[in-house]
Image 1 (cartoon, rainbow, N blue to C red):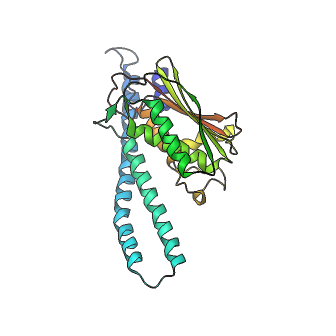
Image 2: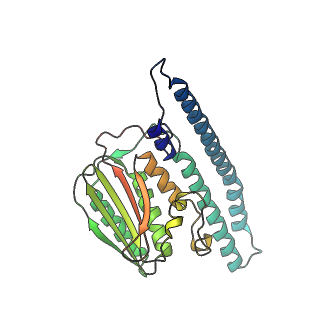
Image 3: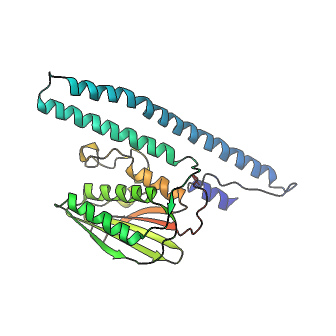
Length: 267
């Protein structure tokens, strides 16, 4: 019971317990499972609400952008500012939809067995090409077999962690890919201001802002790390933050190597 409660508290929301009929703990197990079902229902309701709001916001934004493009009464600077605001709202809506969908069971995975070191090297080269004012480099790249993965999820994890690092670094971002036994770890670290230890658990919550420097003026919409956390739970993995040797934040995304990946769930 203690282990099940701990796993449920860690985000494995499909955790249930079963006692033999007639056991003195049977009623306690039933109560725990009912509580877990009720919590899951509340979470599903919240995600459905977020999904619905995001979809409803799309239509007026499309109309607003169309009217903006057709307007002749705005200066170039005003038009650019309004387009920028609309783009930020559209990005927020897409992130809301992604966040809502990740906490639901998914019946279909797009699995492949990629050359993950090659994928990472290619992706970082592309990022470096479009951010010449920053140094984006590989620190450690473990060669090996990373088994089957849904690369849509991995690309989202890498993009979100890199975007976060580039947003707050002074000049340098380093990335590593590690293999240890039956687990793999993707690490993204930077030379920015870092994150205080007391704030490291909270940064994976949606819309958490630690200080005035970490707000929408830097281009974020507050859901990137929450999405990474949801993907980690879905893959049976973990994500955590500590201090990099560069002086900034280091994010470690770790997952088990599944040669036959089970059904994608929110547990």
